[in-house]
Image (cartoon, rainbow, N blue to C red; front, side, top):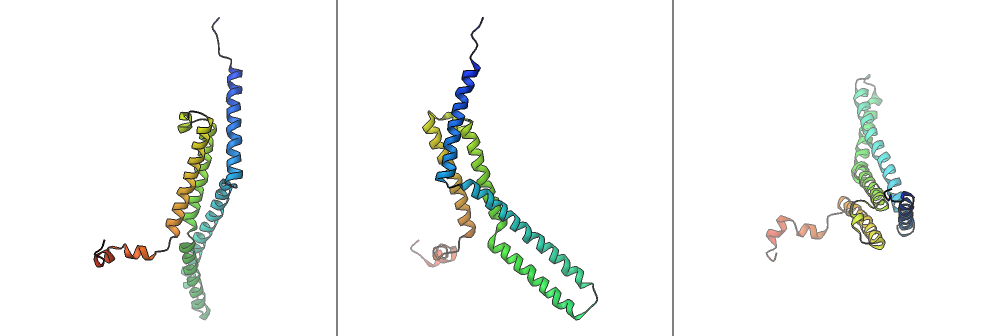
Length: 181
């Protein structure tokens, strides 16, 4: 009779590794990151709702402006259409200023990327299978999660950055006037 590997021993070893990695990842997310993943997930939902409310409001108010124009030419119609037009302008300005459409996508991407890294780490897949030992795998996990957070933060600052004096100096027009560059 051929020697068959003991699957129950192999499974229990694998389960122990998964459990250990799950505990480490849980500790990292809840203690070190203070539930950062949950924060991104929750904020993504809020920003998506805000974006949809703004978009739907603009559509409905724009349609109402057109519809009201065909009503009897009562005096109040011009005031109502002006108010609706102003509301559309304010909503679009808020949408442009707050950027919930871009924000919710960045938050969702960060949240989903963190979940993906967690699954890969726990299941010893992708780059984690190349790790020489458990501390190396955990370090790689932390580094990759931190990279996800850094990418989201970089996107945030790109979207929300205000032009600075440096940006004005670096413009092509100013470079012509500044021969020292």
